[in-house]
Length: 278
Ligand code: KMH
Ligand code: ZN
Image (cartoon, rainbow, N blue to C red; front, side, top):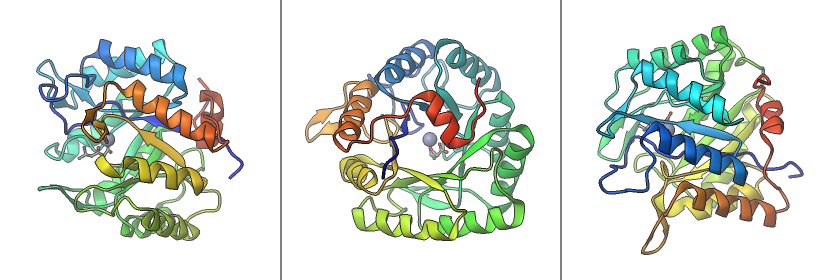
């Protein structure tokens, strides 16, 4: 409870359409400006999905490399690429995301219904992601959409060893239709289940849509960290669309300060997560 708060911004995602959400950053310029402003407000990690020229989700290798380079050049943020992509992305393209050489990458710990779709994460695919990240010195963030995903993570670490850097960090993504609900009781249950993971395992949490604020408050009070951004919610309050990712980061920073757990700097975040200094 005494540590500061790691704030991750997830500015874009793969699910919202630019036509319906004009404030969504989809070009590299928009992403970079968002990254700089969110860093200035207190974010330390950026969870990145990219878009093509028509603003559709893409895992294009050239664009991914260009994005990593631009974020490194323009900010001190820890660059975390999504290997989840969009539900339609093939496994080979999702694995190839690691070739872009990010500091971190996401690794979802199981298959789930994802609204009307299926987000497929086969065991062998998870093992491939985990072991390739170990080999390449990329720090994973294990994405936990359901409580059973923590059991899968325990199995993964038991069979294949700790991630690069030796520290285990998970992100509870709560409130996806098909995953665990975004409630205080579920967050407490998920935190309790961390007892079966290596000592010192840390967690962030994010609540999709309406569960954003309950999950944010529950995570802060439980000693957890925060992920916020337009990947997870495009509504700021009832009837009020999110104006920008900065608005969401600023709100999270305000809550973290009220909780007397101010945002971690990028240097502190690297030390916490086991990400090598630049
Ligand atoms: N877009 C979702 C299907 C991740 O980034 O690793 C998957 C997702 C998780 O967003
Ligand atoms: Zn994502």
